[in-house]
Length: 314
Length: 314
Image (cartoon, rainbow over all chains, first blue to last red):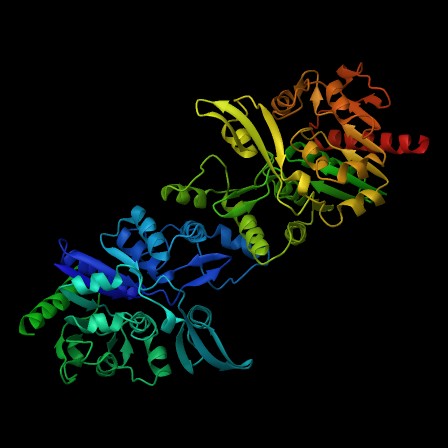
């Protein structure tokens, strides 16, 4: 079986670990969000790709969900001693090595997809991880504070401001001129089913879908999504701040409508959201909390099962 | 008093610490060798400038004479885990931060002299440290081994091969098209005396002197050098391998002749080398071992005293 999954960072990566465990024989291709990517200290940092790679490769800091296990922060402290920032982005020493390798390969002319493949040679995540695009797409957030109305990088809003300042709008800058990375469309076309993990529907899944060609290719397949919202709150993270910014209610119902029946065939919601109803989307309720590996694998299994079931009837 | 000193790495840096201690009120300008500079992992590394900066700034690893005190090697280990080398050049985590800042500033368009000044803002070495040039000059070494005759970067010969393969020739590639960094010629012209520490006469002092304009400017001043050779052996390091490569005997006499009386006015040699004699160079014997801060300061004081004495008579 061939499965394609789109993925953001922490939530997506944990779901993918469950998916790999639920379907160890499947060929899983993960299309990763690169809208969060940022250049720091002259180095190219791809937080979502790395979170997926570290999580599936056994190198993740399990407690915080991002960054490396057994991490130290000597380089960051030294950069601070030089007065060089930003200091709000937590790059550890182990993590720095990843960004040094990536930056060096990009400078040598390799595309991000080739760089990601090279990094995965070490981590062996058990899935094929492809960035959504090799072009630069950067998620920017328009805020208004004492400095006036201005656009800032997503990471500045998300990490430095902890999304505490309302986003007036969110844009994937560069998306409309970007192209899917080599292998993305081919993987989707070859897929038996496509799964949308409970990643952020705006700045993770939404950004991936904004790369021209990807949404149409996915819409042509059987697609099951897992709601990132339980009741009126995100399962984890601050997806509500992103949904509010684009005028969408924070509910499993509203996110299903945001994706729409042209994209989504099935939708897994929490048992407390069993009343969600969207025309032409098959909604099933399941325990959504990825509280341990078994629960996560069961959730992933349910998503694939529903997709296979819906595929039969299409 | 204004003093200019040329300097390579470890030996030069230790001498400079003595010079600063011997003449705390003097304005000391250090012209640093950049022929050893190398790009590693996409980062620009300036070993000699950093050794001077760390040594005078109190950040040096005293035991090894280069690199940072309390150093860790997490980034290097991680790069190795990615299969990315070289692994023979010991960049520590604290040291990496210096190279990251330097590389980022160079990429932003700052000249190496401005970058060095910015790095010294943190270290406050108590001297003005200027690279010999802002242009790229790289010392290459021609060797012959089982792979045939070929030129390799100085660091590969010096650090990886430990100078164990004879150097057939040594060249400062790019030197003839280079220009002194801003401030270099001005500092020399304004200097009361110029001091040559016991740095490597070929790949440190020799490389600095190969930048067009520097040798002539220095030759016009009162210059005292400290022999890097005692008897037939370097005080420290592998200067003998470099001298042999350019056909010069390893002796205090031969190095004085290499510099020549057009450049050198005075020459400090070890007490066991009191028989050294070069026409038009005033040779004095002194304890040359920089075994502790007091001995080093006394040596530096003797060099400056001789220069002031010779300047009187010129």
